[in-house]
Length: 179
Image (cartoon, rainbow, N blue to C red):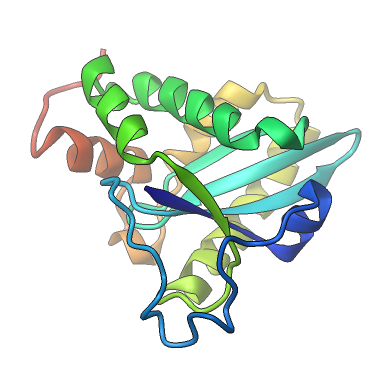
């Protein structure tokens, strides 16, 4: 089980209420714990004319994933499919990707409040959003933008590439060069 921690802007667009609200878990004691190795994902809605996109960032490795926002009703399924494809491009073997995507189920929509590293992830999301707006202006394909997100280092990752950190977390240690 994993949480999709959606901003209020995204939850409003999706017309959903969080599975549990911050008033129910003010001290994190009732917050669900992710069973996936990449942890929970924080999501925000980006309005990049003419498109509406969703930026998702993983809790542990700050791996970013950009995807189309609509249709909102199928967000959980489309997110799992997009993550599956993204992890394959990072060189994670298909059987390991399947295990991670299975461990994430069910995906639960929650709020972006009252969790331990919330401000740090929001800082990463702000940085990623600025970079993506520039790349979108350059008309870069979404797959290339996702590749750039996998190479966007930051202080919370120890100045390492999120894609490599996620790959090591899923595959365990040194798994050789990507093909």
